[in-house]
Amino acid sequence: MTTNRTGRRISSALRAIVPLIIQYHKKGEKYVSILVTGGTGYIGSHTCVELLQAGYDVTVIDNLSNSKRIVMKRIREITGRSASFYPADLLDRNALEQVFRRESIDAVIHFAALKAVGESVSQPLSYYYNNVGGTAMLCTVMQEFGVRTLVFSSSAAVYGTPERVPISEDAPPAPQSPYGRTKYMIEEMLKDLFDSEPGWHISLLRYFNPIGAHESGRIGEDPNNTPNNLMPLLTQVAVRNRDYLTVFGNDYPTHDGTGVRDYIHVVDLARGHLKALEWTRAADRVEAFNFGTGRGCSVLELISNFERATGVSIPYRFAPRRPGDAAFCYADPAKAMRILGWKAERGIEDMCRDAWRWQSGNPNGYPLD
Figure 1 (tube, one colour):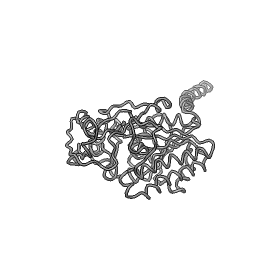
Figure 2 (tube, helix red, strand yellow; figure 1 turned 90 degrees about the horizontal axis):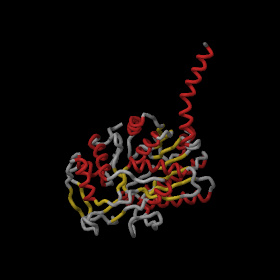
Figure 3 (tube, rainbow, N blue to C red; figure 1 turned 135 degrees about the vertical axis):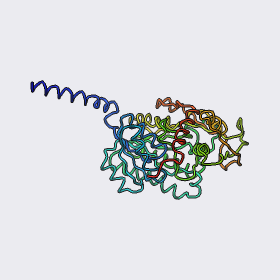
Figure 4 (tube, rainbow, N blue to C red; figure 1 turned 90 degrees about the vertical axis):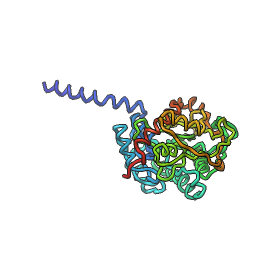
């Protein structure tokens, strides 16, 4: 009897552990634990959700300069899993080394950066110091601890005003703001790092215009200060925190006179990071990838799609064009599909509906911690 009971206990234990072993090997032995810098931010938080739901272990580092700690609680609510969190700055080498000592980091997805284009014009040194300096420090500590896989959050801002659309990855870089130049400088720095030292695996992801939110409505875009992007301004008008939406320019050479952009659902973008991570861990070269839908949508079309998806009217007023704004800017995403096997799946109305679910449930953004 004792032998039978012991056998049953061993059998039960094996049944419990075998799925975990299978899951571990499906992910690949070397890439189980992911460090996400800027993981409480808009794109970072959605990527943490996708990583946790895919079975990865996640560690987040964020200085909370443009996000709130409660995001970690919301991520846990959505996924049923916890991520380790360190409220630290990438420029703090001691804090960064402590994270690498405490956690078994296998790869890094790097979001942490200042990102307001207008602010970068008035405070360029802050942007170069934070964005370029922070990335250099991150890579230095990665070298120290033998971590060589990096997925970098770049931007379509590296292209500047496009000579033609759709924009492919071989378009000549011509960033027009300090923010865009920091992203391009980091891309060049990472290429130099790859060339100088064997064993690095790096991908550069150039985003177009992320909007929307997780379908749960529990996480979304919540800038600490005045929004720099169109959708949070639009949703603030929808909840009547603003009287109207300002549309800059109605005299562009587009079908309705307003600027055309490539809007991509933030969840599609987050899932693209998982595809990039899978590719990067085995890659023997540095590659840049556009993350967009390949379809342009004007400002007035975005407003009408939002009204149709939500039933909420959006008052707006026209204002003169802003210097440097292009008439058209949208991606050629074919390379990401061909190499990563990724493409955007959600349409404009999905993006609007999910953005509204987030904002209407959180009219003032995340509560204070």
